[in-house]
Amino acid sequence: MSTATAILSNTQIERSPSHTVTIYLKETKYEFLKSLRLRVYTASVLSFPLMFYVLFGLVLNGKQAISGMGVPTYMIATYGTFGVMGASLFGTASGLASDRGLGWLQVKRASPMPPFAYFAAKVLVSMGFSAIVVALLMVLGISFGNVRMPLAETAKLVGTLVAGSIPFSVMGLAIGYFVGPNSAPAAINLIYLPMSFCSGLWVPYMFLPKVVQQIALALPPYHLSQLALGTVGAGFHQSTTGHWEVLFAFTLICLGVARIGFQRDQGKLYG
Amino acid sequence: MIATLEETASRQRANFGAVVASLEGVSKNYGEVRALRNVNFTVHAGQVVALLGPNGAGKTTAVKLLLGLLQPNSGKTRVFGGDPTNPQNRMRTGAMLQVGRVPETLRVGEHIDLFSSYYTNPLPLAEVLAAAGLEKLRDRKFGDLSGGQRQRTLFALAICGNPDLLFLDEPTVGLDVEARRALWEEIRRLVDQGKTVLLTTHYLEEADALADRIAVINQGEIISEGTPAEIKAQTSGKRIRCITALSLATLLQIPGVTDARQDRDAIEIHAREAEPVVRALLARDASLSGLEITSAGLEEAFLALTQDNGENGNRKN
Image 1 (cartoon, rainbow over the protein chains, first blue to last red):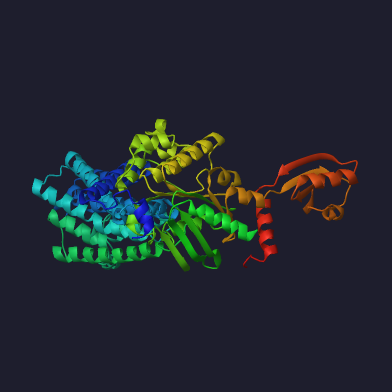
Image 2 (cartoon, rainbow over the protein chains, first blue to last red):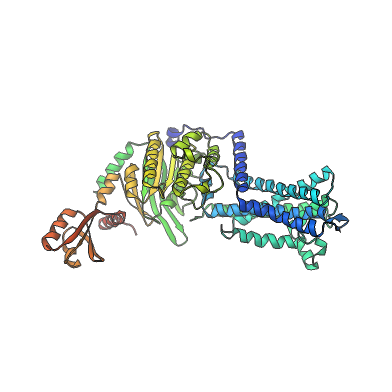
């Protein structure tokens, strides 16, 4: 180290592992508070899946059955996937696009924040909101749709959907690196809504046109919804492992894309 | 004159500590735009250095290079003798940058709490709030703050880690006179504690009030460097405004006049010194009226500086 360091170095500059854990927890806590207080986010992320579920799962088709099970139960899995996807994409992509585009991420990068903490917080908070959406769907289903399932099965369904938030959060990070702060919501909707329809999240898979059924096989939300349906005994097609493998591969691809964006950012100017 | 300047500068440097941050022959381009051209610049421990220049001069680029947020196209950037992106160096620096949007739903105290947690040796929250004049705003959401309060919050985030080296990019933009003076006081207090500060500004007055050394930057080049007194000596032009029957050509022939132009019904004259020019004006035009004399603004100062450099053949283009 140079003389300058010797003269000025009166601060301890190595961080302890417990200090690093504290940073991750604080980053996550404030990311959560930030999102929770952002009415546009909470309202849109929670209200759409819940509204659709009430309308299509309870009011219109509440007494019907698909694949030998009540529609209210079936649709917790599909609208659950829809809700998880929305919470994850909006939670990561629009926040990242705005932080990047409007200079806030530079302030963070100039600080000694561990860079990974920023991303980890976004993913964890998306999982948190995913859990909230799924829990609210369960409450609605149990209260008004006569949904009854053993505790173990409930835990498995919720766990699967919340874990399914990870691929979409990472996808959100990849999108957030390549869209501007103003175009982010539109860009997300452009991906989110068609993908949801084609994956059978609104109209059950078996009622989709043949062509769309073929497309669905290539879409991550289809695989997550099949995993979720599998936990309540309504999945079909591939094995559970097959669906997880697709989601895993998809996550890796998105991570790669996000990484390219991250590296590109290191030498770029904003504003 | 140049030699004297350099002598003074080296004497000045001898009084301060080692180099803590430097740009060595740094050029930075954004596509076709050349933001910095072969800039050499050092910041010594315990100094306040001001980068003074108009908008788009390259001040922010210089700061971002020293923060490791940008990489130079050529040349070297060093902070504490090493790479600016080194996490250990970041632990010892604080930065206030110009930001378009800060998360608005977090409270002032929460923002500070989070940034403090990044550092190993942060200041207590109460101390940071007091230093930035935010005691009463701790529980206010960022989105509910006024422009000046937002600037002060960003300042708080820069100092909360108790850093040795502070980068302040246009720290007083949007502050009223009172808040500006309060921030100056705070910067002086930090320097008294042994901190080093690099600030950018387009106010000559601000650089004069705070800096030990000023580097004037224009179009990506440092065109002059020295103590505030030295810089002011080079830029102490006057602006004379009056209504006169004399023609522009006649005015330009008066010794000491550097520029003259028609401004509505009046004439605006730029001169090194006001008195001899005014004497000449009054002698030649008895009907002269509406006489006003003001110090030249920064714009004229830059003109004067660039012209000086041109005359001495030092300006690189």
